[in-house]
Image (cartoon, rainbow, N blue to C red; front, side, top):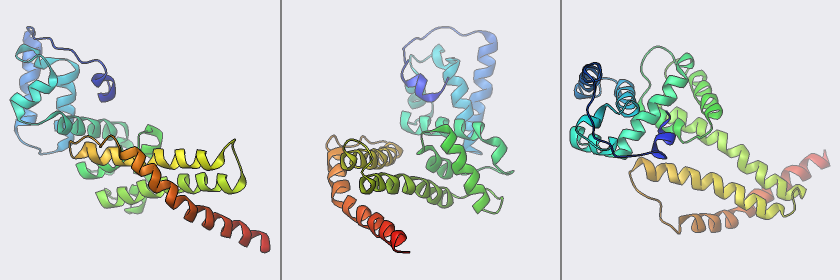
Length: 224
């Protein structure tokens, strides 16, 4: 079960667990209690505790278990688990050695698993085959978003779509809002309700610059 699927199907259920489940719970909790020797192990241990509902012997929800047992909030727990899921899905791309939680946090900002994989692969290449840093992954993520913005602006110049200017504003706003939401989630906060509107206004103001750049590019190509 993915972290996103779990969040959509939460329930409270305290109940007995079997002897085998008790042993597994002890084993998995030992990993967490050692501290973050590797955050990936902690994330995977929490994933298994959550998915198998091993917490149910004393706690009605996984969030209550994390708060009571480990004094961590749901934001941090889900960040560790989401990061572990990304690492598990891309182990074949990562060199020997643990990648930092900060680096994977940057990759998680890309929602599409295929694009996440592209980001990690490129970051490893840029790092010379070594484990990429958070800064390197962040640069790759930003580079991936830039062409989307330029393409949206180019559509306005080329007159694509029924209302190209509106379409460009919507697409660029979506990209920026998703990035902003990721930042707020990382800090355990909710994005202000009026933030998307403010972002769209800024996008509208800045779109002219992108259109001008695209026009110069088109004019330059035509004059050659």
